[in-house]
Length: 195
Ligand code: GLN
Image (cartoon, rainbow, N blue to C red):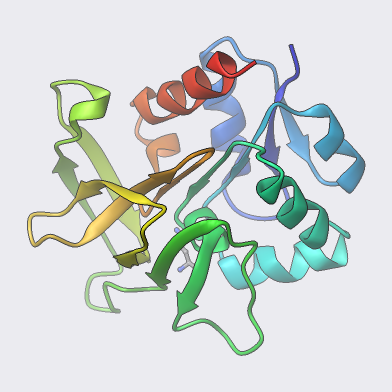
């Protein structure tokens, strides 16, 4: 069985590696294009999307990741990772690009400086009865979802904070730091089911 990769250029990739290991998965920190050939799926961590964008180009990973997404590699992005997966990014830094693939419009830092971070409980039927405790840190929001994607979770005010589309999954928040492994399990289950 191929390992699950975690893009390890910047951000909280160690937390994702740790969760995967907790689930009994072999996990690998991805830093080079060659490694993309030897993974079953990829997680893009939280961090700073403009930096992940720059570093991925510096490491020769930008085009290979983009191609892998289009070829069907399962990818889960949290926070900055969700931004990297979005087809359209609003409030991006000049020149900032995303890998794309998810048919959504995402707005960076959507909760403003007054509420840099907050926590809330989300009801997500796909993940079971118990609410998911979600931690938002300078989080993006999904402004709109195109025909190919679907919203998985919304805040009480209706704003979309989790989406999926075929092989792709994205959350505005950080399940890798709460100890609730259900999002990772959900992703891994789908990855392993298609092998
Ligand atoms: N604000 C960050 C960005 O634009 C995302 C924050 C996060 O990943 N916690 O990439």
